[in-house]
Length: 551
Image (cartoon, rainbow, N blue to C red; front, side, top):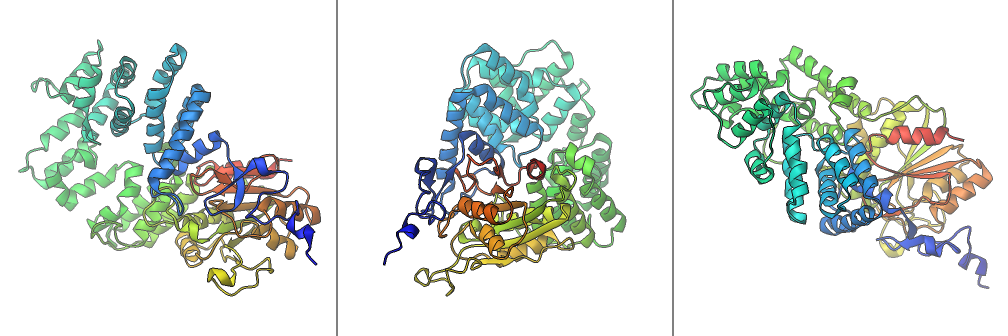
C-alpha cells in the first residue's frame, strides 16, 4: 500500500520539492533543488566579497556578473544612500579581498544614482576613502566610461581626488601608478581638469601631464625616480636611491629589476600587501635565499604582525593565495621557481588567522561541515588554483584554532546507482559524510589538501544535522560552508535542523557560510536561529561567534 505520509510530509520533504506551505519562499537552485533565496542586500554583500571571477560550477562568469549587476541596480533604486554606505564601510574596514568589485559598484552608483544634491555631496565626501590609490582611480574611470561616460558631476568627483590630497601622498601615487587599465594620470587630469590654489598640488599636476619646469625641485620620491631612469645607472646607485627616496618596485625602471641588490633594497620597506604578493619573486631573486637567515626572520616577523595586517587591510583571501602559491615553490603563471622556507610558511599560516577579526572563544559546541561536492570545485573569490572546497577547509581550521569544542566533517551526498557514483545505501544518513582530522597542529596547506582529496558527487546539505541526530552529538551551532546547490536529500536542511532541535537541543543554531556569489541559501530567513553570512568576509568569525553567544 502506498504510504501517502511519505509523499507529502511537511517535516521531511525531498529537496527536489518545496517544503509544503513554503512554496512562495523557495525557488529552484541551479542543481534542481529547492532552497531559500537571500535578499538583494545579502547578495550585494556576497558580490562585494566573493566577486564573480571564474564563475561557479553552474554559472559562467559573465552570467554571474550580469545577475549580480542587476541586483546592484535594484539596490540603487531602493536606497542609493544605503548602497554608498555599504560600499564605503566594506572598503574602509577591509572586508573585501579585492577592490575591483567595489570600484565597479561605485561606478555603477555614480552612473545610475540620482541627481539628489545630498546624495552627490555624500558621494564626493566618501570618494577618496574608497578610491585610495591611483590604480583604483584608473579602474573606477574605466568602469564609469563603460557605463555612461563623464558628466560634470563625475569630473568634479574625480578632480577633488587630486585637489583635496596631501601633496606627499599625491606625489607617491603619481610615482607608483603611472599608467594602468588603459589610463594614466595625464588622461584623468585632462578629463577632469582639477583646479586648486595650492602651488605644490599644481606642480604635481603639471608634472603628471608632462608640463613641469625641470629646474623646479620635485618631491623626493619623484626626484629619486627621475634620477634612476638612465639605463647606465649602476645597480648599487639604484639600490641607494630606492632606500633614500622610499621607492617601490613600480617606480623602478625595468632594467634595474634584474639586479638582486635592487630587490634587497626594495624588500627593506616593501608595503605589506606587496610583500605577500612578491614572496616568490623575492625568493627567486635570492633575497630570501636559505642562507639569508636574518632577512627571512625580518620578513616572517612583518608577515605575522597583527597590527600591521590590520593597518594595511590585508584580507584573508590575499594571505590564502600567498600560502598556496609560495608553498608550492613555483608561480601559477610563468616559470619562476624558488626554495620554500618553513619560517615563511609558518608566518603565513599565522597571518591567515590574524587577518580575520576574531573575538574570545564562546565555549559553544560547534559542528563545522564542509561541502565537498562537485560544485565546490569552482574557484573561490577568483583565486588561482584554490577551489571553494579548499577555501572552506582553511576557514574551518580558523574555527579549530579559536574555539575549544569543534568537530569538522566533510559531506557531499549519499550516492545512488543510477547516478554512477559509489554504491551506497541512500537510507543511511551518514552516507556521503566523513569526519575531517583537523586539529591545532594541522597547517592550512594540509587542510586544503585534505579537502581537495574529498571532492565527490552531488550535494545534500541536510547531512550534518542528520549525522548529529543519528549519533546523538551535542551541538550548539552547526556551521555549513557551501554554495547551497543542494538537491539530493530526502529532507531539507531546515527540517533536519528542526528534527535535531526537537530531539536534543531546542536552541541549536545554523550558520550558512556562502562560498559563491549566487542568490541561494539553505538558511530559513524566517527562523531567528539561522544565519546567512559570506565566506571570507574578514568579519565572519566575529559575526558567527556573536550569533552563537546570543540567547
